[in-house]
Image (cartoon, helix red, strand yellow):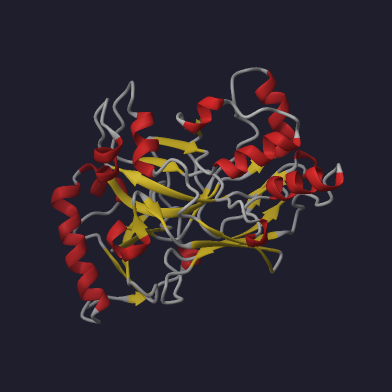
Length: 326
C-alpha cells in the first residue's frame, strides 16, 4: 500500500491512502489520523489500511478523490529519529579522493551514519529556503525507510524485517558550511537544513521484485533545472543494505517505531549514469581538471527526484522543489 500525509494546518497532517498509480486517494480517518499512530500499532492498523488500499485500487472506495502531491507534507512530517547513512562507497571515495583524503579501511565493514534533525521535514513540493547562495546549496537524492520497533542488538537479517515503509529523500546539504563544522570534530548541524521526502511512502511489497536484499533495485532520476543529470541504480552498489544500517543503529540502543533511516547519496561507479548530488560531479571534475567547473545551486533553481518502476510509472511520486531566499 501507499500512504501520504495531507496538509491540514496541523503539525502531523492527515493520513491518506493513495492508489498504486498515484491517481486517487482516500482519507484514513476511520482507521487512523496520523502515520505515527499506525507505526505505533502496526499489526492492528496496517491490515485495515491494506483493505482500504485494495478497495481504492479496485475503484470501490466510496469517498476517493484525486491525489495531489502539492498538498502533501512529508509522509512522516516529524519523526523520533532521522539517521542518514552513506552506504554508496563510490560517493564517499570520490568526494574524499578529490580533497586528498584517504578512505579508512573500516569503511568496508562499518557504515558511516550521522543523526540529522527530525523535528521539521519538508514536503515534496515545499521550497528549499536558504539564506545565502554562498553556502553551497546542494541536493542529495536518496532512498529512505521508516522502521517499526527494533530491539538493541538485533542482527541485520532480522532488522530488515522491521522496515515498514520505503520512500525517497532530498537530504539538502550546504557544502561550504561542512568543512568548518567537521573541523570542530562534532559533526554536521547548520550544514544540514531540513530534509524533504517523496509524496508517498510505500510498503516493501509494493516494490515487487525491485525489493531484494534490503535494497531497492531501481534507477533514481535527478533532474536539475529541467535537465536530467542522474539516472543512478539504487540497488547493486549499495554496500550496506537497510538491514545492516538499522542493525548499526541498534548496536547500543533500542530503535523505536517511526525512526527514518537514509541510504546516503545514490551513486554508481559508472560515471555515465550521472550524479545524485552536485558535490560528486565537482569531485569528478577536480580529479580530471584539477578544479571543479560546476557551480552549486542558486535561488530559483529547481530539483526533481523520482523513481520509476518497471512499468514506467512513478513509484513514490516526485520530490519537486525550488530553491528560495528567506
